[in-house]
Length: 250
Image (cartoon, rainbow, N blue to C red):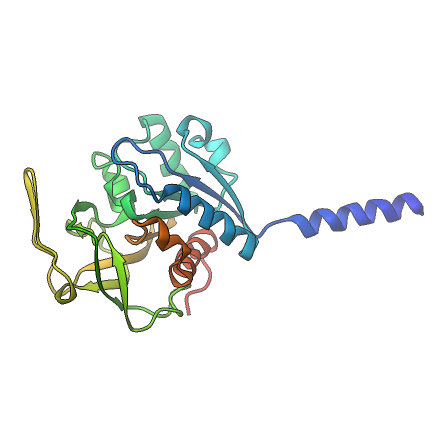
């Protein structure tokens, strides 16, 4: 009887320790390296403790981008990745992961990643073109029914490196946030490219069902201090939660 009681306690302890889901955070850069990456990792780990999900962080694609390892995770976060970060074999494994029902979360320069991988550009939804200097501007809520959107005011000030994007790469995008270009100066000039803004509809965050899985993207997250903002953190959690579970849309 004593042995059975001990076994029961051990079993109960194991059940109590099981997290809701597992998240892989991937932050390899093959271009610009954002100062905010470590703040982002810290924020996602703290969200994991707050909302009971496990987080594993790596910048080594050889370690995790294969069928066996990816199967351990319900969502993969591309945290300010840049450039060509996966080889052909790793790309194939990630495509199979999404087609099997996995979730993708792209943060900030995840849209400045893998331009020559057409499937990935469709997964992200829009690709980065250029940005002006960091400025304060007005965020506008387009869809308050998505997880993590309920704490945003309909219009609120935020300070960000406002990405200007190219055209939509997918026809199934659902938009969550836009920025009001009349509240900042979107014009910029880079060597070989210019930015003039995107006009009356300038997307900042969106989601979609894609190729059997789920994709969420937010362009917010350039500044390290942004990851300490409670509203942004809740927005990020909502995207992770939906990507991992598919639940929460009203």
